[in-house]
Length: 372
Ligand SMILES: NC(=O)c1ccc[n+]([C@@H]2O[C@H](COP(=O)([O-])OP(=O)(O)OC[C@H]3O[C@@H](n4cnc5c(N)ncnc54)[C@H](OP(=O)(O)O)[C@@H]3O)[C@@H](O)[C@H]2O)c1
Image (cartoon, rainbow, N blue to C red):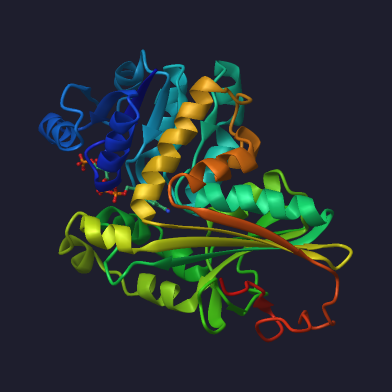
C-alpha cells in the first residue's frame, strides 16, 4: 500500500507521515517545497520515503504526483483556499481521498459537488477525518440509532489544550473562516442547512466539567455530515462560548508570531471530547461521548486509519460521511487502542416541556452530558 500525504511538511502533516512510518505503510510526501518535504521525512523517521513537488494551481501536475498511490491524505489548510484542487487531482489520479479539514463550509462544498465525479472514477472521498469530524459523526450515528426516529441531535465539542496555543495552521484556517466561526455556521433544520438559526442549547456540561458552561453555536463538521445518514429534523453544533471568544480574538499578527504548533509535551497534555445527544420522537434520549488526549496526534491516527480502511476494506465510491464509509463501532473500538474512550447511554422519556430532565445536570436547554 502506498499513501500520498499532501502538505506533508506541515505541523500535522509531519505527524501523519510519522504515523504512516510507524505502521509500515509506504508513504509519498507531496508539497510545494522539496527541502521542507525532505526535512519533514527525516524528522518523521521516514527519510527513505519518496518526495514529490506539486502545487495546487496545476491539477495535471498534482494528479501526476499522486499517481501510483492508493490514497491521498490532504493536510494542507486552509482548505477553503486549496482543498478542492487536491480533491480534484486525487480523483483524476484514481486515488481514494481523505483530509483533516475542520472547515464546515469547505466540507459541505466537497459533499455537494464531488459525489458524482468520485463515484464515476470509482474512488471514495471522505473529508473531515480529524479528532472532531470523524468521531462526532460516528458517535452521533450510534446515538441516533438507539432512539430512532430522531427529532433533534446536538453535537458538542470541548478542547482542553493544557495552556498551549493551537497550531499556527489551525489559526490560519480559523482566520480564513472567521466569519463562519464567529457567526456560528450552519444548522440543519427541516431538510436544509441554514445560517443564523438561533441556538437551542444555551449551556452544556462536558464530562469532567464541574458546571454547565454557556454554549454557543459553532460550525462543527458533524452538522454537515450527520444529516446525510441520520434522518433528524434538527442538527446543531455547539461549543463552550469561551472557545468562540478565543477564536474571535485571532489576528494575522498573532498568528504570524506563533511557533508551528504546540511542543510534544503540551500536545500530549491536551484533550478533545465530542458529545452527541439524540432525542427520539418518543422522548427518550441517547448520549454518546468520545474523548482522548492529544488533538493533533489523534488526528494523525484517525487520518491514517481512515485512508487505510478505504484501501483495504473499501467503501461505496462517492463522498460518504464517515459513518457511511466505516463501521462506526469498529472504528471507535480501534481508537480505544490509541487512548480514546467512548460511551453511549440511553435515558427513558421524562423531559418536561421546557426540555429539562428530572435529576438532570443543568437548567432547561442544557445539553445533558454527565460528568465522567
Ligand atoms: N480538528 C480539526 O479541525 C483539525 C485538527 C488538526 C488539523 N486541522 C487542520 O489541518 C490543517 C493543517 O494544520 P497544520 O497545523 O498542520 O498547518 P501548517 O503547519 O501550517 O501546515 C500546512 C501545510 O499545508 C501546506 N499548504 C498550505 N497552503 C497551501 C497551498 N495553497 N498550496 C499548497 N500547500 C499549502 C503548507 O505548505 P508550505 O510549507 O509549502 O506552506 C504546509 O505543508 C489546518 O487547516 C488545520 O485547521 C484540523
